[in-house]
Image (cartoon, rainbow, N blue to C red):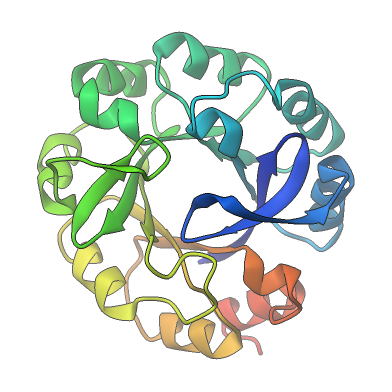
Length: 243
């Protein structure tokens, strides 16, 4: 299991939201490219990138910054937010993004997403943005008709790599990971799972280590890092069992 530091982009700045609400953003770094380089220098093995403007339907605002981040670091990048067409997905792969996290598009066009996963084998994650056991879409402002279990039934036999699970109620709130939600969803799928939403401090990572599953691929560190609760090198030592 790896620690994946997060950069959430809003108007080309590195921000964090509370519960995914667009107007709660706090700027943590005016230079996301330098922030990405810092994460690479810390030994992180993958960057979690979110285009918040695209997630809320404001496309193309952060494109140049995303390109600069990709050009500025060598570690893999996974990106989510507003990937609602095959063209957008292919454009990201063309500039060298390694993994895509697809939310709304995975709900509305599952056949297209599965075809995309055939062309980019094990490069696609489906977003499990969960509120009251329902998958939220369109920047988390609209409730879909799907539960996580129903999405597993659609995608588990496809060529997607796995899922990125976020507890929206906890996201950005520093109240601790939803251990029960993580365990439940791990038991329902045979795919990889990356988890986020609510990471508070090292004790959360210690608890996460008690979940014995080879499919628990990573944990996303956002606000917990930016407010100083998480040291990335120490966090990875905990996850490796070397702390």
